[in-house]
Image 1 (cartoon, rainbow, N blue to C red):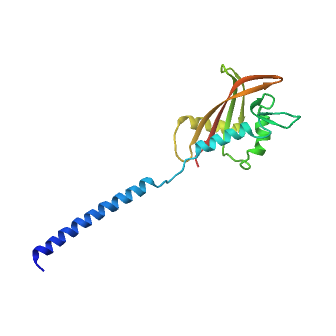
Image 2: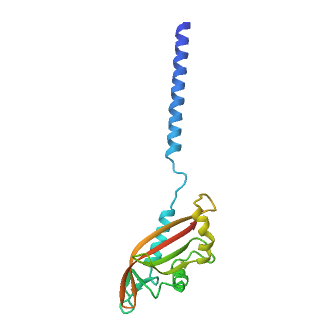
Image 3: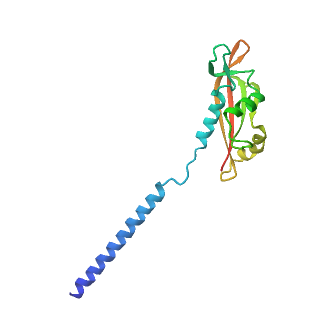
Length: 174
């Protein structure tokens, strides 16, 4: 073989190797860029937790004693207290004994933002986590906060009054 042809083949091989290395680097970059390493489901969990508080059987929603029908979106003022949230909801939203999975504060108010009553789900953990959540840090050991505001009807005796229910849900990062 001639020396000129050999050096041309070596030069073409080097160009091919550089092209293959660039193509492999692009493929590796694309795989690393598109592969999901972590999934953040906090918004989904907090919305589900808030919805379970509002729409669960034997919760703060109004339930007709004669028909047994639950009226979602209608808050019974007699059920909106600490006892209901600690007692009845612990049976339906139960994460284990001494669990610190979630805590919430519920504020029931009229449409003009006049507060009627507040209640807590797991008040002890809520008070422990509220300042850490308001700082806004992220990472393991920190707490995330989400506020859901829902327009509801408030049943006070025989009266139906329009109002708002603000639910602040706190959940720790695991």
